[in-house]
Image 1 (spheres, one colour):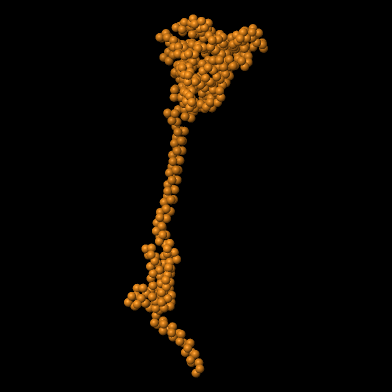
Image 2: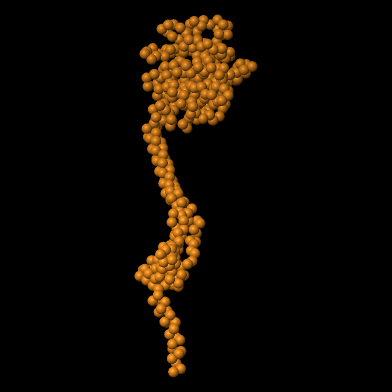
Length: 425
């Protein structure tokens, strides 16, 4: 009898829970106006806050047992919804907040911009790379095309004037068999002159300076006139370009051009370069043998004879007199033959009209080599033979210079030494 009350007491909580379960769980319901915003359920109380159009929207209601078993309503979504489920009366009467509710609108609005930038930047970079690659390929193709097919308007752009296996000297003297023999075309001359690199000065005179230059790996001589000697430069270039003038014993002419160095205008005359220098310097450096004397004398006579000779024909050559023949105007070639140079005072004879083309030049020849009739002002300048005779007189003095440096039997002639001293005094 004493155990009955204690068993009854232990059964009271179970009875209360059964009564409560039968009565249902009471929760706050925002949509239940007809039941005083209260609902009953066998499942759980539910409270949720979600982001809608940038604003937080709170919903409180009941969750039935089947819905609770589906495990849908009691799960939150990061930064978008937050949901709480509880199991006591009115336990959903709480205040919920999204953890970063204040930052969500800005991030939501910035989403499309970030997406656009993310897509646009790689596309732009890729486009630039493609354009640069196309330009590089096009430039390389153009360069290869220019190398493969030279520009006809720039015939000397890559030193392609000289054919394979030929030197500049071969090109100069090939012009004698090409038809005219008057020299290279004007455009070619200007191109050569503008691509020459001056190396060192090798001589000076009253006309200007002589430099050794480089063109396409070959040595050339550059005679630079000052602008006040333009007449001498023009006349010499004109004589050198006379038809059929080319000869192995006349200095090989290459080009004539004027160049502006920024301060004044230089007048260039480009010709073959002979490292031995002038006959005057050559004789002063040493003596010559009898064979060497004959070789020098014969080559000078051959060159002067070609100048004096008239070639009759469709492309003939007029007779030309030098008027300033001397040892300083004769160059010694590598094979110890000579080439006549410095034709700035030369005169031309037109046999058809019987006229003499005398340059309007204030320069005169060297007095020591002048014929007596020139010194006495007694030469008839209307007869071309007078100029030729004067050249022969100068040639005789050049021969004297060669002969006095000739070594016979290992010694110079005492008479030659005495006479040379008298002439130089």
